[in-house]
Amino acid sequence: MLHHSRADFPEGFLFGTATSAYQIEGHATGGAGRTQWDDFAATPGNVAGAENGALACDHYHKWPQDLDLIADAGFDSYRFSISWARVLPDGFGPVNAEGVDFYDRLVDGMLERGIKPAATLYHWEMPSALLDLGGWRNRDVAKWFADYTYTIMSTLGDRIWSAAPINEPWCVSWLSHFLGQHAPGVRDIRATARAMHHVLLAHGHAIEAMRSLGMDNLGAVCNLEYAEPVDDTPEAAQAASLYDGLYNRWFLSGLFKQEYPEDVLTGLAPHMPAGWEDDFGIIAQPLDWCGLNYYTRKLIAPDPGAWPSLREVEGPLDKTQLGWEIYPDGLEHFLKNTAATYTGDLPLYVTENGMAWDDTPGRADVERIAYLNSHLDAVQRALAAGVPCKGYYVWSLLDNFEWAFGYAPRFGLVHTDFASLQRTPKASYDALKAALSERT
Image (cartoon, rainbow, N blue to C red; front, side, top):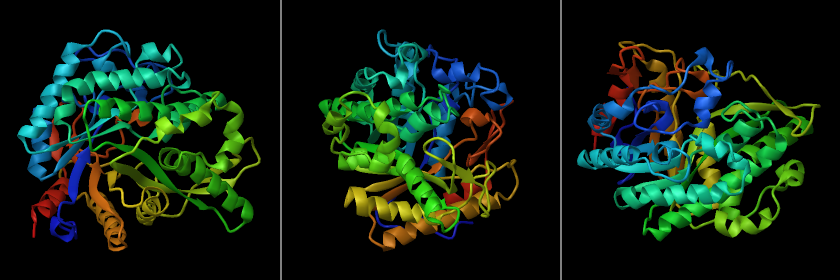
């Protein structure tokens, strides 16, 4: 069981769960356009088991059942994402009315169940037609994204509790354009520099679009990863600091300080788009909250290769199914550091936190419960230190399509049988349900 209950958190502290569109909906259904993830998955070797999101969890048809699971657990809010290609199959141009209607019904379904809709406009489904035009390396992507944001929020915006433009800009840019591990699978430093800037520019324009519609409670969601030197040498310390810069400080600094860290610019400045220095007024639009996605830490060592001249080293801590070290102290660190360095009194939310484990229905699920306990402990320590953390979202509601890892990693509070699509709540779901029922 969880050793914290709702009663242990401040009045109004929100508990939620999160998913993303391509990972659960079934992208082949409902008139959605082709995305870069369809292309990436169709390329041999990119996705484990040659799997894709064509069916996923069939949330497109099973959403009432899934919303019932959220409500029955006692969650206050549901962080979901909207597929750009489901709304605008080509990224711009004709609207897919069936797709808009799906999200319209989904939001109404949340409200009918007393669930606060927390929308994300982009969780990595770049329409293929826009990728053909350069995708995130093309500056015009910021305008395309703002137009899409205006289109869908003109319908949904009056009922959305909170909204963030883009989930995890590091994954959108560095992981996908430098490491090549996510769609579009590029390994090119020039594309990376442009993507790392344009993703923030698109964020700013989308915030402007939603403000023009009268929307509020708008934020940004960054994924953060704790970087620790592999040893006590100056070279390892420098490598870990640079990792922190390109993973964490680049995006938070751009959003909240209107600057990029100098150590990262050492490598990226020659490849940045012309005039990038003039875009911070758009990037740093005033926000109502900041969301932190946190999972793990990395041990970092120097490497003699090309910039950034570093490498990851396997650490000694307990690990999840994906080999990610379990390090709850990193969550406490980022909550404290983000408030102290970037956001001040701005509300913070843990917008994703959870673990993959190879589990089946009926087992004790002790690993996931222990993970939740240790990370909720970290939130409690941050709250005790005065951090304005206002909520915590568990990733994820369902076992789902876990991107390049396919369907093997199971992050869900609810087990998904991918043959029958049957949903079965796990012991961690039951533990959260019991904890959330306990009020002062």
